Length: 456
Image: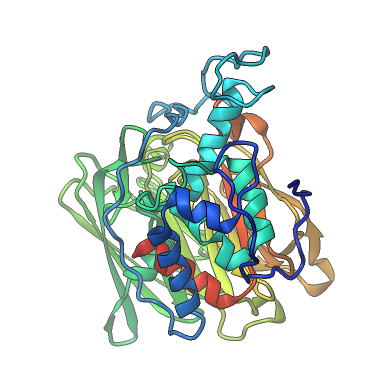
């Protein structure tokens, strides 16, 4: 039976009776055949979670123990020295042979490159692939199963997606958001500045890094327009530092965080307190401004978001995704990780997603969305006037810049979303670095169920 590579607009999630087929590369799979080779309990569990969450309340998120990755192609090494920018070219790796492989386990006409590239996407999906029939329907499932070579070893019900095997900024913000104390009219946030080991990808060695509250990017500081904000930093490093709130228009310039211009640096074991009013809404940042090439490059960076008291029509969105790029620590990263360990953007048909680009690196990155336009609504924390709002599929974000875009999702699919400087995203071993995926599912309940299944 041949399968044409078309995706139905309205996927039929029923299970039609079909002959069983073996799970081999090059053969489309029925759901029944897939259940046999991949493990009925695994798929049934995820599918049941999807069904149950159709009417259940949103799950309480918590991290499970990350699974031990099975045999997989090693992610390309993109780590750069702490104080040096990475070379703007693909990671060093052997170029794939142009001649077809003689290996009987490699499909005719393929090379080692094709197998390595497929393995990266397999790692990205992990056991999330088991939910595909219940979420997208049988036709989508058969096409993806054939494309990715579903067999007796993949998907493994015990192996979570690569992006769940490392800590993630957005999940940390959702599970344990940075909650302020109150001191009269002040909202008081407390953060530490720490030496940490950062996992760019579960299959790569950790890299020595710096972080706020022992993570990079640091936890998102989120307030409302007009709030009085006090942020107390405790320096646990072996060196001095200072913190700049990027984009804030201070009344008191001594709060601007530039050592020897507006303050003394604060040394190991010392605290420093910044106080200011959140006088305008927008997507802003906080980061080191002392030995900054090294300290920001090694991870002293985070998002500072001020929500508006009076939202505009463009502030009407269903999901909010912060996208902090860096190109020093660990190579080309989004929120501290490289593909396939980058957390996807999840949305349901009919929803609008706000994506907040924040470039904390030293290079320009043109971020390109496949299949969807990006409606540009703000730059550097300033809303564009309605007459200046525009649509694009590629947004170039320079160092220090922030761009806010809205994406209105009206079609299901797995849509690539990446920097379009190609050596930042793909090499001889497949995709890496600044690659993301916009996953659009039919219903909001599917998003909730996928999150519950991934973190169960």
